[in-house]
Length: 488
Image (cartoon, rainbow, N blue to C red; front, side, top):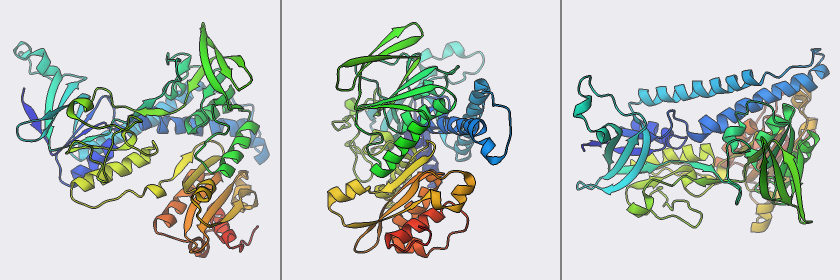
């Protein structure tokens, strides 16, 4: 079987893989990109970040029309939910973005292969071999079909001196409770329910569970979140997480914290969920069980063990500062390696990995990677939390400003939440920023920018912010670090 030669082979076309492919092409490399899906974008674009945000925005508009238009003097009949139309809009958003990525890959002359890839070791020339079983066999000239072995129609071998693994992750199931795709579901199915669940039970109080629970609660479902830990969002600043918890409870989401789900019994199209909150076994009935307790790297079937790629105790690939694994010439980025499982983290690593291969000394500043939870209100953060700074013994000052005192937030009727800035007590350098409130996911970019340049709370305070705008809350919080806020 003939080998197709490239400078770089990338396995996985999610946010880490397709971004790496484009950057490699920009740097003059001949690139092959292998993806098992028919479309690029990975979990994020096809069944995660993008479709969930499309439904979050749609459900927010529905809730605004139902609950808050009257406050603005807009009188309408009670809105009617057309779930099919909402789902079609979500799918259209995804399609347009996947089409956009396909265009970018074509524009950058990247060879795309739709299929599954396996590492097959080193060829005599010292290059890595990757065997790809194509999902759609290549076209064979008319009249020659019988002259080509069926295997050669479906399997090709690629070779390159460098390979990047970017296959992402998959949802983790509860122990002894497998996914069935109908009642016990992942986020993928929860983004495509064909009818409103009467009662949605969410296992897991992290970002995915809270976001999708918010969608279906706003649309009218009863939602119960069960979390094994005593609080939601355990890695978030506690003041921010506690405020969000209270807000979601006011919206009608029920929480059972410190609760372990022990079993699920199917009864037709419904389920009985068995759980224990420390006082004995209990049970509750529901229509759907969304399991959002975490994700695990997708490493199966890649041939890692056969070629000698080392994994850590959590099943992630071990890499050096250049993202190279224990096998020279084989690299890994994104959810396959240590760190938060975030699309933007994967993209940053994809670019850095390719630039390292090209001889550039690029570095990802992990301490300045922002995180966001797209509930209503939103929550976002970058840098250390108060809890982390205290544990590390780092002296700090805290400044805080509530959106209730902000003119723009009042005009929007979005007054819930705050901005909190943590700055070093001695040199005033910003150590962390945590936001709960309107457009927190957008506002956090200013904080990440300032921190990446080593900025101080005073630097933020000296920047003139337009009025009336939401970012004014960041400036006021920065002023409050030194107790100079004008509007507190």
